Structure formats: structure tokens, C-alpha cells
Length: 120
Image (cartoon, rainbow, N blue to C red; front, side):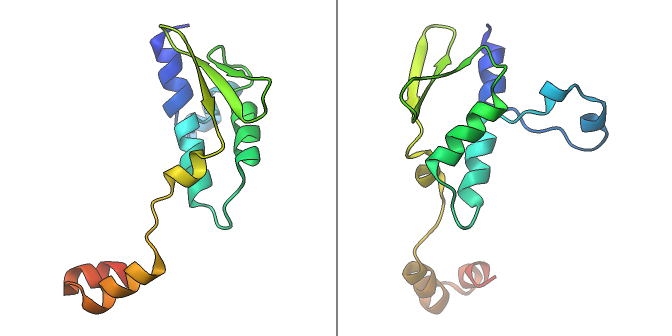
């Protein structure tokens, strides 16, 4: 296990196009950051249980990702030591939304350029 293995686990992007067609089956798995970002953008938002299931599915052959006995926890074998993470708040903490009230105020009272951005 190397630091590169940890980076791949966290930030690997899925291959697309010709690269995906010519790649081995395990080369197309997604990193944890990509999965969390995808789950955060979905409406309705998926549960942390679904997120953990996807982590396990994508990382089943990983030597760095280890599922813990407690269902909402997993471990990453970093180069220095193993670190345990709790997945329950990953999706909520990754969402970049503003309230509809604030958005309405920005559109009505704000700078015209900013109002245009928020109104679509």
C-alpha cells in the first residue's frame, strides 16, 4: 500500500469514452470524493446507507478501504496509520445549497449581475 493507493481511493474519476472501453474492469471504479459529490447532487437525496453501499461496491477490491463492523463506519489505511471515518453526515456536509429565502432576497435586492446568476 502506497500513498498513491490512498489518493486513488479518495479521488479517482471514472474513465469515459475510448479509455473506458479499453480499461480493465477495476480501472473504472470511482473514488470516495466522486461518489459523495454525486450523491450530494441527486434529488431526492439518497441516504447515508446507500452511500456506504456504493463505497463498498466501488472499493470491494481495495487494499486501502476497510469496512468496519459498525455499519456507518469504514477505515482507510493511510501510509502512517489507519483512520476510521463515519459516513452519516458526508452527504449533508457536502451540499452547497443556500436557502430559498436567501436566494429570493439576492434576486430581488441584490446586484443585477448576481441576481441574474441566481435567477438562471
